[in-house]
Amino acid sequence: MAELHNFGVKPIPCHAWNQDRTQLALSPNNNDVNIYQKQATGWKLMHTLSEHTLQITGIDWAPKTNRIVTCGADRNAYVWQLNDGEWQQELVILRINRAATCVKWSPEEDKFAVGSSSRMISVCYFESENNWWVSKHIKKPLRSTVLSIDWHPNNILLVAGCCDYKAYIFSAYIKEINNKPGPTVWGKKMTFGYLMQEFSMPCYGWVHGVSFSKSGDRLAMVSHGSEVCVATGGSELVTLRTPHLPFLDCLWLTENSFVAAGHDCNPMLYTVDDACSSVTFCCKLDQASKGAGSGRAVSAMNMFKMMDKKGSVATGDNEPQTKHKNAILQVLKYSDDKFSTSGSDGNVIVWNVKSLESSIEEMKIV
Amino acid sequence: MSSTLKPYLNAVRTTLDAAMCLGNFNSQVVERHIKPEVEVKTSKELLLTPAVIARNEKEKVLIEASYNSIRVSIAVKQADEIEEILCQKFMRFMMMRAENFVILRRKPMKGYDISFLITNFHTEQMLKNKLVDFVIHFMEEIDKEISEMKLSVNARARIVAEEFLKRF
Image (cartoon, rainbow over all chains, first blue to last red; front, side):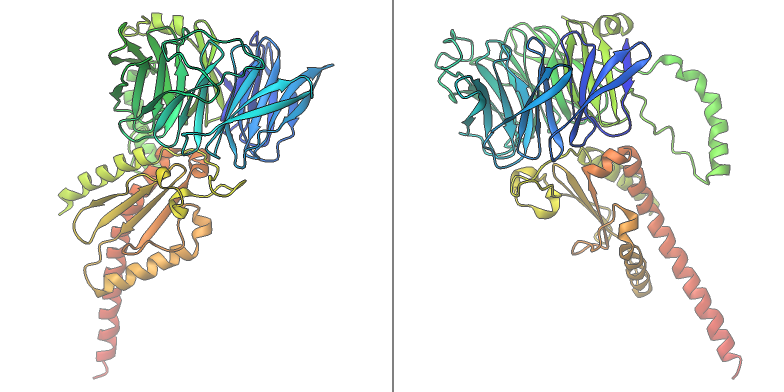
């Protein structure tokens, strides 16, 4: 149902899988990237990529070309290639003067976008004449730190969630390397840096996570106002105010359902109707097993034991019952019916949607 | 009197639960730096609306939150002069040892007696629900401690006065 992999006690703000999911690259909240290989009895540390001088804030692994891009608080990004069993880095000149916050390869893996604290997005592509990575900036109208980025499947559009309470859809069409794209639901004109559409969060919350659906026609956003918002091209934002703590990331599972996870330490499933006019909460995906009833009698004894040993009056079981013991920081697609989450507790958990669906009654993927 | 205590503490607890959703944030203003945004207040969009939860005019809690840090300031009940002096000395004792306390602020905010500064680094190292439990527990215990100290001050004063007046 859910496989828990522990990598220590430090938070894991970013992680990335390779193409066949046998290797995992993650950063334990420091300047290095650790690459682990899956073994029969656990994970073995294969490589440590140390080039960044400050904390690493984003990692993405391009499955087809097998390249890793990392970005950090030291304003740099590196593209790593595997040569003769060793990972070699290439510096990318981002030309940003504050920390980078997030990075994502485009679907065709010919370019990647880096969000930064300097209120701009750097879209980088490889210029073969000079043999280096070149960056182009998207600045207007971003007015604060870019928190999250996601690419549209057409390899041209990208969405950015920002601290100025808005989510923006930009075109990242680079005429040197991309073919002219056809029109999408988000608009027709696609010059580089053109703002296709902009969404303002009703609750003035920082937009922590954004995600395009598989077709690219739908966009999900989660913000700090405990809201979950969905939009489709040209239409108004559809929001749902949730009674939970804010979410930090979201991911579409199918065209009509997506999962959001965050400070509640629990991934939650939301469904959208066909016309994209309403979002409804479906269920929590991390439900503690019902066998806790037998713990009742034991806990009375425990209570007196606690009073005797530690002098504390038991205030009830405050340990989080979820698999993640601290906030979930990132949700990634693992396979067609699995997704992985990494959290502040040092755990990476792979959730199997099919087996969850069979075990939780109210859950239904539409 | 104590019938207002439970709802007061519950309100503070739920507000802290919501406000303590912190994450790492590199400064937008100074490169390569991380600053607690609630202290520097350079970027208005990173600050949340401050909330005051007041039991009465004298006892209140101010919670100011931002992206990566939260400041909780507590105004403790001080009914008379003795309690004021005891409270001030007790808080000063703790604030001088703020480094060992980890989440304590060395100076309280204006109008309050003691302040906590909790950053995302603290919520990464410690469990968030335990931090909230601690602040609530602290608020409950402070009142008890000060009453106890006041009683013992009065008891000692009585004993001293008795001994002194025995000479006459």
